[in-house]
Length: 503
Image (cartoon, rainbow, N blue to C red; front, side):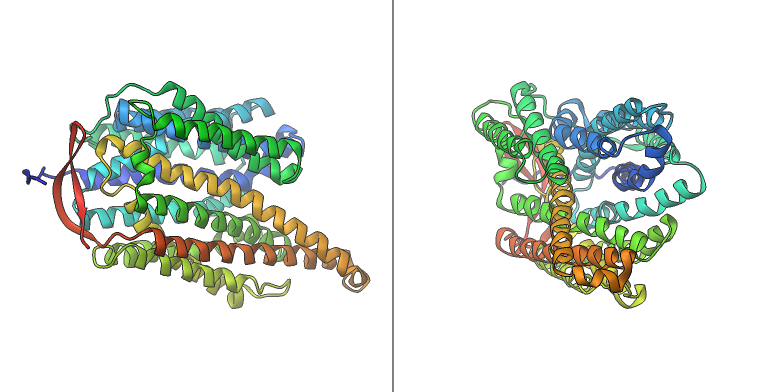
């Protein structure tokens, strides 16, 4: 490859990182903060038990279905413009949600949040990818981003608990507005997108339609599986539809001149391994949030605020694992030697939680498990986030970033539905085989024992999923450590400055 003069880094890049991080935190927080407020919102607006899932599902469908489209718009339109538009739209939708007077208004606001989130999330990550190209700086930047991506969901539980318990559920929406205003103002004043990094090719409209419908069908299929069962006609129909639509999308993308998702992005062995292992790890993480929240609140009697604080050790572990372990070692060892041990450490933390009982202590069981989970996930997330966009052509940065978010979103949908179904089946089996204990334990005690057995069974599956993530990281990801040289690489008509990988 011919050597070219290195482009001087943007002197305001670290200030830009601060505003990108604020925006990412807002999006990640929203994934869990509304969950805590849902019971209060349901009672206030008179939402039925049947329809309450749509407060979560409306957001997930819009966000998951439009992510690839949002990433492509960021590449085409410009990441800074997509970033600020996404922030303004997300804040507007949040204001509508907080002011909701009825169920329809709330559900519409959630769908609108998801749509603008699908524009904002890939724009934020791709801005990071094209702004930080010197590897040591990139390691620090992605360490911060990875800590937010991993720990933001747990932080949402804390903030959601505070706002719901001491103010009102509506503040779980209104709190997004100052985040968005600060990030948008900072983006306008500070962020500068590198010249020549846009993809000016036309928009692949058929690809947009197929990808959006396919992803919506997939995410909604897992949502219906949780409520209707895996063998219901609706669930099977949605999964079949997703396979057909996404298969047609892949075939189309291999033939069109300007694809929505260039196959070079996902067929790269290392990026493909990151998307797959990260998506599987998110399945396990979402299962943990779900069952540990129920365990602490229902079984142990914690308040929403106490439950949020109970997740702090995991957040601390993720920050340490991402910024102090992953970021420091990323330029010294191959990514697979950080990701695989990280997933294995997290699996050990999950393994501890499989031993939970109704009378288990927080300090003796939950605390050490959370510390290991946080350290492991933080260590693994950091190189995964970086490698997912490392070396990709700047014109593809938005869609590559969207694939990271898509793997997380689909993983979250699968995790909630799959593990919840496994837990429910385990509870049913346990009740059938331990009916004689009902009189001894009492109604509440018997129900709690059954629930904990269901949680533990589902967490065993999460352990296995994390082990598979570690195996994928070792076998798929074969690149060497990320070196510190920045060179020029050409691909088709475009030239871009990208980091190289040292073997």
